[in-house]
Structure formats: structure tokens, C-alpha cells
Length: 145
Image 1: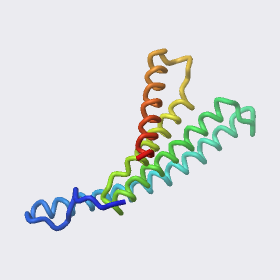
Image 2: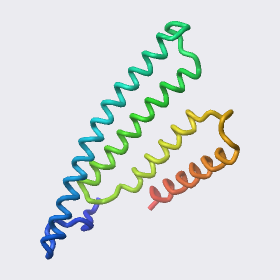
Image 3: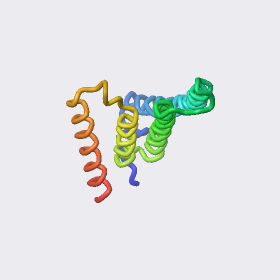
Image 4: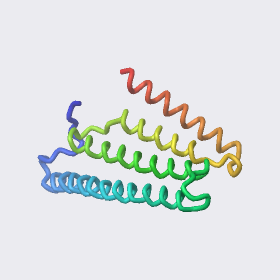
């Protein structure tokens, strides 16, 4: 990837240079916090899985229990994708558009997996479908170059 100059650290104006460096520090802090979120998410997956296993019927997962565990798993995977976005941005100063769209697709897949079709309006289903279609087309077009 090519390096963009959206946040050049050496700028004619010392204030702008300082502000750009400050933003880079903030991005690094976000990366550290995202790692903490990932570890807490993994702990949550273990906790959710354990909770579902100890409820009656003991050591047996019902379909709704499996969906709860899947939702926890996918939340952690989305956090990992976001971390990758942050790291890639730090390395190249380029917003990794394809990875961002892939992360959004994964988030929508999580939404579809955990959606309770008995509690949502049909318009909500159509909206989710439209967003997935738009993201899919965007992912295809970005990858095509």
C-alpha cells in the first residue's frame, strides 16, 4: 500500500505537526484498548458458553444457546477485525477500505445470525438485506480495482 500524507508528522506549522502526532498517539491508545476489549470478549465467550452448559438440561446446548455462543464469538471476531484496521492504518496511514467493508459485512452477518425473526418488523429484515447487498457490491467493486 502507498503511504498517504493525511497526518504528516513534519508540517510547516508546529501546531498542526503537534496535533498530527497527538492523533497518532490516540490511535495507538485505541489499539491497546481494542486488545483489552478482545481479551474481555474472549472471557465473555467462555462465560456465555459455561452458563449455557450448566443450565438445564445439563451439558446440552439448545439451538437458542448455540446462537448466544455464536453471537459472543462473532463479537470477538469483529473486535479482531477492528484491531487489524487500526494496525493497518498505523502502518500505512491508509484507511484499509476493503478490510473496513469486510468488517462491516461480518457485523451484518452477526446481526443476521442472532436476529429473532419473531420480534422484528419485515421492514427491518428488508433494510438488513439491503445493507448486506450494498456491502457485498462494495466489497466486490473495491476488490476488483
